Structure formats: C-alpha cells, structure tokens
Picture 1: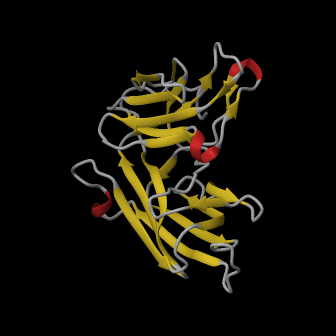
Picture 2: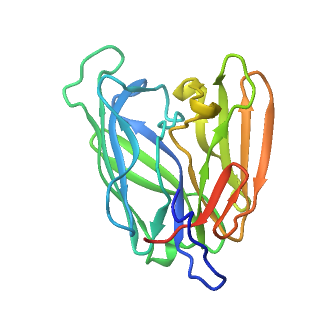
Length: 251
C-alpha cells in the first residue's frame, strides 16, 4: 500500500490509471488446449520499472482450454499510472499442444500500448476497451478500463472463522461506473487459498484502481454457496474497513 502515512487535501491533482480486466489468447494457430507459460509485464509513467501481470515458469504452465479462458493474472502489485502511456511487454510460450511437441514454442511476443495522450484512450462514456497483439502464432486481447482521478485500492481478505482455515471460491472487484468484473481470485483457475497468520488470505492479485468520485464493490462468493458484496467509498489518506483506498501519486 502506497502513501498511507500521508494526507492529501482537496484540490490535490489526482492521476489517471487503468484496470486490467482480463487477458485472453483470442486465437491460436495451434488450436486449443494450450499449456502456456512466460511473462506479461507493464511499464507505466511512474518509473518504467517492470510490473508483472503474468509470470509462470515452464514447469508451472496454465492450461488454456479455449479462447474464453483468461490468463490467471497475478498483478499488478500496485496501481498503474497513465500520464503519457503504459507499455505492455508480452513473451508467452507453449510447452506442448495436445500432447505433441511444437517446433516453435513462442505463441505470442511483442508490445502493446495504452496511449494516455490520444483522446481515443479517454472515452466520454465508461467502457471496456481492448488492445490486440497479433504476433507469432496467436492473437492476444488485453481488456482494460480507463480510470480518471484514480486512487489505489488494496484488498485484504481475513478469515474470521472457518474449519479448515482456507478459502475456496471467488473474489471479484468492480467499480460503480463499469459493468464488468475484475477477478482477483478464482479457486477453479488458481486453486484453493490457505490462510496465513491472523487468518489473512494472500491473493496473488489484490490491487484495484477506482476513481475518487466512484465507489468500489467487492463480492466474495464461497464455493459452499454464500455470496456477500461490500461497497467502499474512497477517502483521502484513510483506511476503509479491509480495503485501503489511498490517492495514487508518485513518491
């Protein structure tokens, strides 16, 4: 969590951000299923350092059964800032296809950009936008939403009472302006989570950007059938329940 020890007054200039909703291999020369590994990283206007969205080793592939299966994202670990642009570096490979070896393991490699200067990136109506990367042996779709005057929400889930002490289900975030789900965890894709010290469940993905003028909605759906949705209102320099909603700024 960033800047939790600072208070920002009214009139402070907020930064713009983006939420990565999902990444899909929309088409594949190899067909499906695919055993995918490799990396997708983002470099934003803050420091151009690598921010991992997807990272898997060759011995830890994700099985993609169809074009509708999203990659299991493990980031970003912090909010992404848009001033001029966000650059995405894609380097995905396949281990094998339908039990046979492939001559070229590279399935997708190249660059994508969310252009923060072009007005096309600042839609007058809130909507999910898509950047496409056609390369090697596939087409990759990166789906995202643009967030004005963004604050960074860090989500923490704590199990208060359970036996055994684990979580099996889904954790979904969405903002009041966008009719789309941002999947923070899905046990069917990423496996069951075991609570650590204090009952805290460490999800691989736990950061969401939300406009200071919106609200953040968190839905927890357990496999046993219980569903709960909680609404959070961003505040400046405050901790709100289990989510910290802090203005995201450099420094």
